[in-house]
Length: 253
Image: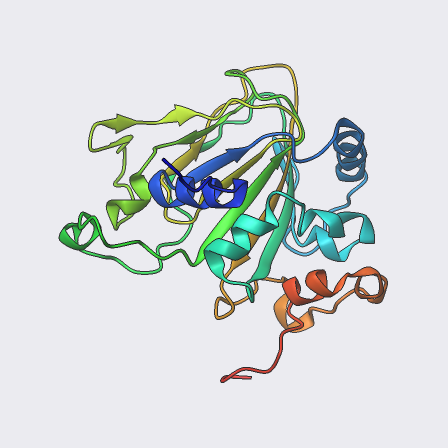
């Protein structure tokens, strides 16, 4: 019998619809991983950035053209556009270092576009639309001791945020995402997930890029004082310019 084979993009989107996340292997090569780790080490805090047990640097794409290829890496941008639309854009890009002793984060979701009743979410023909997703590019090999991201498969269909101390959904507990440097975890904003402790003597390096549908606002601090770096804009490809907000005119423009 004949049949159709899913493309890698279709498989990833199906995983995002079914589980709320997908792990993409080998997106970035070892040389790029080393370059990005060095670039994070060279960052200086600006605006709302902070440093300590965890170092957190916002809007890194605007600091140097070096970061631009990680707005639309091959293997990631295709399922993002398939999920959020060909006119989606970046709403933030953040670099992290999580040092030994980092305590992680409780179970949470990032953004719930709408609270929906279970009867709606349990209806098999209903496909929950996505509005925001995040690509987590790991720049360290992640094992059980190096603060792996914890995810609860399927919890994006809960239609609500987890309650305090709630660590499972419909009997499904949290699972650690164990992966290699250069892998990307793509997750929907409604997925219940958590950050675990760093019990190793190593530092976890991570680059997050957040994407939203065209009508989701971009989160570029310091907002009223925001200005694009001319060198960055000059180095952008047409797709990267669109991802940074250079859209065609639409109804509310």
